[in-house]
Each structure stands twice: as structure tokens, then as C-alpha cells.
Length: 320
Ligand SMILES: NC(=O)c1ccc[n+]([C@@H]2O[C@H](COP(=O)([O-])OP(=O)(O)OC[C@H]3O[C@@H](n4cnc5c(N)ncnc54)[C@H](O)[C@@H]3O)[C@@H](O)[C@H]2O)c1
Ligand SMILES: O=P(O)(O)OC[C@H](O)CO
Image (cartoon, rainbow, N blue to C red; front, side):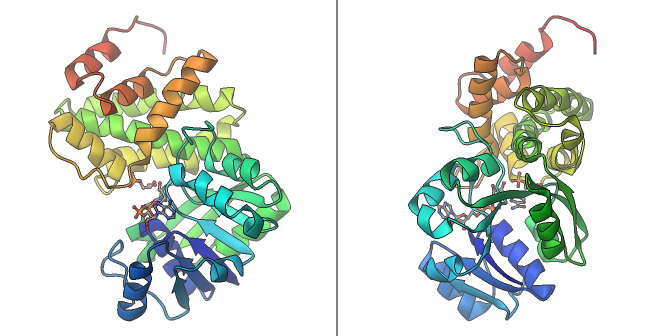
């Protein structure tokens, strides 16, 4: 199958490598022409060091070859998705668009699949999400992910087409649950990083993960998600991975916040904008989301780690 991928960062490139090694023809679009030349000449992408890009992967900074593909995976940061869709709405109409980004759009308060549905109404929207680091996928390590598509027949086709010998896809029609699980776990990963960075200990991290999960569920269920989706790969699975591994950029950002050390702010850390979106959504919907609110305040410098901790610990005692 011929598959287009928009976004030549770590994840888009890793998916391209895995799908190309499985026999697909991959076209990868990068917005940066220098990156394209570099990938063509070296068969490597510095975002994914040590991984050779297969010969059945082509690259361009022009969009036309991408738009020649009927199925396009979109792996650019969540906050850049609306502008990409709006700028290319005509060319994307009629395509199958699989969002591979994780976040809630700060302007629209929607997850990636919903953003696609809103902005390109005559495309078919799906979502690929779940616990997976780009480096693991590119190296062919075993990974289980969620393919969410409201149209189950199309979802089944994508599940087969995008599964490989190392990537096992599970299918759901609950796109809301899949997009919210993937977005919210990044906020919890920042919180977990803060706890470890501030030397609060592993028990504190376990408390954050465990109390963070019902917080994720509260918002997701209020927005129409199914509980099973949150308990699956795209929710609980990705929460566990991202809160416990320093391969995660969200977690590493939290570590830096908690320990007061520097962090390269050009890094893609989706949980920062998502925390702000969630704080606003929770206020509007009257939903209690204390961990997300504290993370949003911390990232904006509105509170410090000691005050944030006190805010969480001084809440009224309640039933579990
Ligand atoms: N890296 C992972 O392990 C991983 C795993 C699962 C999901 N994701 C998700 O994939 C998405 C992309 O993450 P990544 O790891 O590839 O990030 P990255 O920082 O490695 O790459 C992001 C890419 O997007 C491009 N980009 C940025 N703004 C753009 C714009 N306006 N238009 C077009 N391209 C633009 C950049 O040039 C860069 O190539 C994120 O939502 C992330 O949560 C990443
Ligand atoms: O590096 P992060 O924190 O964006 O996490 C990557 C993936 O989302 C993990 O599933």
C-alpha cells in the first residue's frame, strides 16, 4: 500500500520506517527542505539517530507527492494541526487522514481526530495512538497501539493496513476516548516528572498516576468517551509508559521543572498546551481536575513546586 506521512519528526519517520520495512511504499513530507536533502543523501534523520531509512521511503518538502496518497498519517505537533488542515483543506478533502499527534487544541478545545472532522469535513478521520516511543517503533521492537475510527469498516481496513510484524493494532470506534487518553496522559507525565525531579519519591509518583487516571476519566467521560477506551492502550497504557520512562519528553520536562534545571524549550512537549486547554475545559464543565490545574499553573510560572504540592495535599479528605 502507498502511505503518505506528514511530519518528518521522530514519530512520523519511525512510523514510516516500520511501515516501509513491512513492504509499504512510504512518502514522507517534511516542511524543511534541508531536512529532505539530508534524508535523501544520508538515509538518516537526526530526529531518529542510528536508524537507516529504507529505500522504499521517499521524501519531499513539496506537498503534491503527499497529496497523491489516499491515506495520510499526520505526525506534526497537535497545536500545529489546525493550520496545516486549514491551509490544505481542498487537497485533503476525500482523503483518509490518520492523526498521530497527541494533544488538545488550545483554540478549539478538540482532540486531533475531532479537529480533522471539524476542519476537513469531507475527509475520513482516524487516530493512531497508544504507548510507543519512536525509537522503539523504528527499531522494530514490539508495540501495541489503538486505531480509532468512527467508521468501523474503515477502521478495520486501517487496522490491517497499518499493522506490521512488530506493531499490533487494536481497533475502536471511540475516537473521543482515544484522543483524550493520549492527550491527558502527557499532563500526568509532566506531573510525575515533577514529583521525581523534586525528590518526592516513587510512592508520590504512584499516587499521581493512580489519582491522575480517574481525573483523566472524569473529563473524557464528560466529553462522551467510553470507559473501556480510557482503561486501554490509548489511556491507561500510555499513562503508565509516559509517567515512568525518561524516554518521554513530557516526563523529562517535568523532571526539569521539579529539579529546577534547564530544559530545551524547542522540544516537542505536548502536555504544556494540553494542560492549559484542560484547565479551561474543566472550569467550563465544572469538573474537578486538580493535577492538571497544578501542572498548567506550574508551566506558566503561576505557582512553584512547594506550593503546588501543598495545593494537592491540602485538599479535603474523601472516599477513594
Ligand atoms: N516521539 C514519540 O515517541 C511519539 C510517540 C507517539 C506519538 N508522538 C506524537 O507525534 C507528534 C509529533 O511528535 P514527534 O515526536 O514527531 O516530534 P518531533 O519534535 O520529533 O517532530 C515534530 C516535527 O513536526 C514538524 N513541524 C512542527 N511544526 C510544524 C508545522 N507547523 N507544519 C509542519 N510540520 C511541523 C517539525 O519540523 C518536526 O519535524 C506529537 O503529537 C507526539 O505526541 C510522538
Ligand atoms: O516523548 P513524549 O512524552 O511525547 O511521549 C511519546 C509517546 O507519546 C509515548 O507514548
